[in-house]
Length: 195
Image 1 (tube, rainbow, N blue to C red):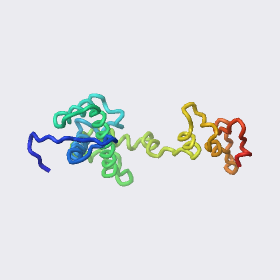
Image 2 (cartoon, rainbow, N blue to C red; image 1 turned 90 degrees about the vertical axis):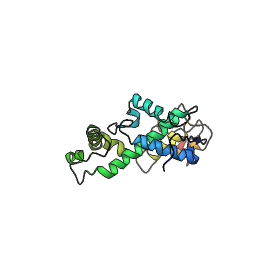
Image 3 (cartoon, one colour; image 1 turned 135 degrees about the vertical axis):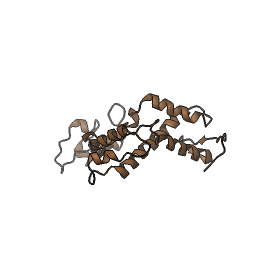
Image 4 (cartoon, helix red, strand yellow; image 1 turned 135 degrees about the horizontal axis):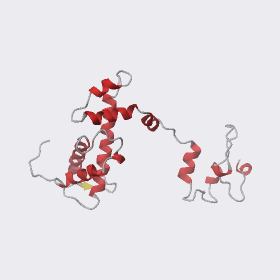
């Protein structure tokens, strides 16, 4: 879409900090464009959290020339650019990273348009690293770990006199030796009473 120079759109956000209406749609596309530019988001940066703060400051300033800003604008901009940056790098990996078909040196030669060779080489090296393998194929929490994480109080204990206690019974068939720390039976409940 082509818009006349000087035209400004009002960007409204809903209660979930998501841009809405026509201005929001254009704004999101603009932030996606920023996420693909090497001068704002170099692809050699391993993760959004490791992106230099000067780049993030430049990202925040760019839309201010085009869009009127309000309180919380900076946080929303960075959130959306981070999402687009992650999606863009995922697309690059899907389209260009083919370790089964090409050697690392061959992949170095296929630099995506608009990006530096050094940044691309850093990204390919990261994708080939054991660190990336561990992050990409990490272990999921067990059912018990997940339950404890989602149902425990801040101090680590469980809410007394609730059904939560009954779910934390040692698994007899698995042979796992669960210590008393892994379950809370309460003052008057024992594992045999729960069954």
